[in-house]
Length: 462
Ligand SMILES: Cc1cc2nc3c(=O)[nH]c(=O)nc-3n(C[C@H](O)[C@H](O)[C@H](O)COP(=O)(O)OP(=O)(O)OC[C@H]3O[C@@H](n4cnc5c(N)ncnc54)[C@H](O)[C@@H]3O)c2cc1C
Ligand SMILES: NC(=O)c1ccc[n+]([C@@H]2O[C@H](COP(=O)([O-])OP(=O)(O)OC[C@H]3O[C@@H](n4cnc5c(N)ncnc54)[C@H](OP(=O)(O)O)[C@@H]3O)[C@@H](O)[C@H]2O)c1
Image 1 (tube, helix red, strand yellow):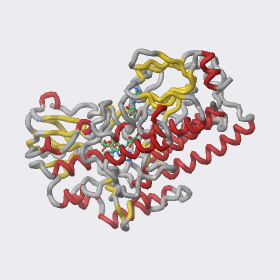
Image 2 (cartoon, helix red, strand yellow):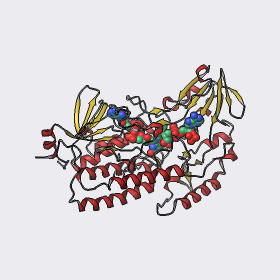
Image 3 (cartoon, protein in one colour):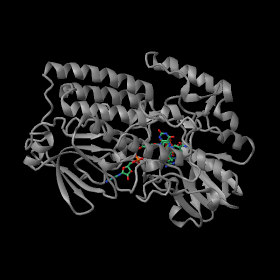
Image 4 (cartoon, rainbow, N blue to C red):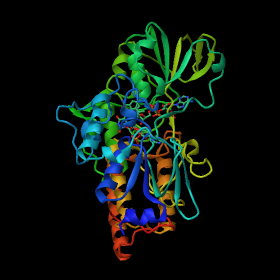
């Protein structure tokens, strides 16, 4: 009996994949190519998730003039280059078109069930997953792949600033920002020092009466180009100790544009690479031209004014909170799997150590692009499902997770935005090593696929 046949006989389908953003489509490709039966459910009527401006799923943070900040070669999938006609940093519409082309090229469109959301997913005692769709239908699966994205659930300041409930102006989160027409002639405070804050402050500065950039912490501003090349195209060898690479990059940025405080921004309280990179080729230019005024953090909102922590007070019409996102899994019961304060501890960001049969794709925040990392993760899970890769013993996984978490928390500034950080090259390098080690373990076990659901036979390629 084929894998699908064995599964149907038991009542369980094989793999359920949640989401067809860039992470979901590459995971779908990995399953498809391995002949692993799966269903992929996508809420929207198209793929691309965040990169679909005005996505009907209501989850996209894309604004009209969003361009990628990781360069094209860094973002494209390994076996499907972006068109040569694309610029180094394409527009969101080109990125969304690229993902559409990807699914057509690899014949994945028919494998995705569009306009169908997963409302609930629970694992039974026998390991079977019961998945409830927003159509009302329930289905049973052996395994679950989660690729629902982690930049759609807006995190507002916690706690809210004093006086925010009585502020006379408008308050909004970066997630709902569309374009700068709303700022015309207004006095705008943009709060935060991540990439949303950079883009939105720059855009506001062209039309607003005043634009203030308010920060609770200084950051290193990474230019998009250095030596005429996208900065992320400069070789970054994971075999060179991180401290050495860190010193070199920080020195490069300092000599290129000077320290942030020279531009009136707060001095970073950390070294380069100890916070998620803030990439902007335009913010310093707009500050140097006097169109953006740096400010410290907001202390309070006072009617029509904002008081900052240095005691200065400004009349303000709009406050834009660029304060990041929450990692959310609305389809899991909170006490089953959740990420309080964005913390979720997984083996190499994919395997849950205590819940077999669930895999997370794209749930990581690289210094670099997510897509090639999600691609490698999908292939890794595919190999695992077929028995071509075997996990290390449970205790080793826990030790690996603990070491990884300790290293991340020691390196990064304490913040809810630094809970799933990885270095692009290092992650791929160490994952390749782990996959080789796991292939050896699998060989020693005779390539026996894992039994994830006691009610059905192990998954085999159909
Ligand atoms: C403004 C902005 C700019 C960014 N720029 C970059 C960049 O330049 N480079 C980079 O690498 N990263 C960037 N990112 C990070 C971004 O997360 C990734 O680019 C990418 O979108 C991640 O893809 P994903 O598939 O994991 O998530 P998403 O793109 O969020 O896709 C998730 C998909 O899952 C679907 N889904 C969610 N829940 C369900 C459900 N319950 N049932 C069915 N379907 C569901 C959604 O409809 C969506 O299609 C940016 C993020 C933001 C907010
Ligand atoms: N052009 C692009 O490609 C582009 C554009 C936008 C976003 N993005 C990506 O989208 C993701 C999210 O970026 P983001 O900028 O929206 O969020 P983010 O990276 O999480 O940054 C949030 C910022 O808000 C600050 N902050 C949070 N809570 C605060 C509070 N209560 N008071 C004051 N400051 C507070 C944080 O400071 P601390 O550091 O002190 O916590 C940080 O500076 C990232 O992956 C980013 O690279 C890319």
